[in-house]
Image (cartoon, rainbow, N blue to C red; front, side, top):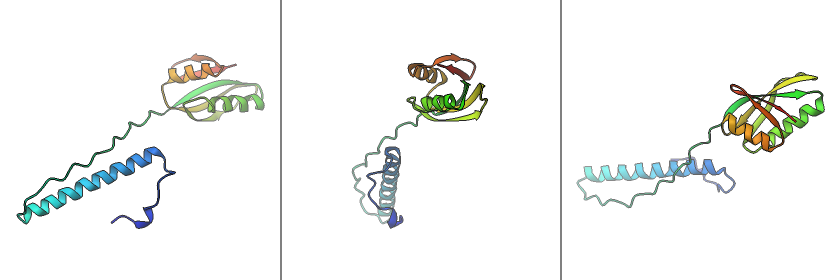
Length: 141
């Protein structure tokens, strides 16, 4: 028996989590129906098949990858502005510096829901000049 404290309204729940909960409930319902049918068959009763419970479709998870992005960092303000602009790019899940070089070239790790070439296109649309290498990008304004 599930914990009754978990039976609260799920109106504010993430839609992906809600789909998983619904899928779990559908599996439990099918298993309960199968157990009831097996018990009825053991007792010699006639089994009438219940209407099948529709199984909600669970969307495939988005592919999220981490990429290296190099950027010019002449001062602290430009570092903050560049990271903020990258974080505001659609599809970017996160961006954090992995190497700081004030007055030189810094490196950040960007988590993006898509491919490296799609990230390059998204950054270009945000006004960056983008050079794409093997598994990494270099950006500038």
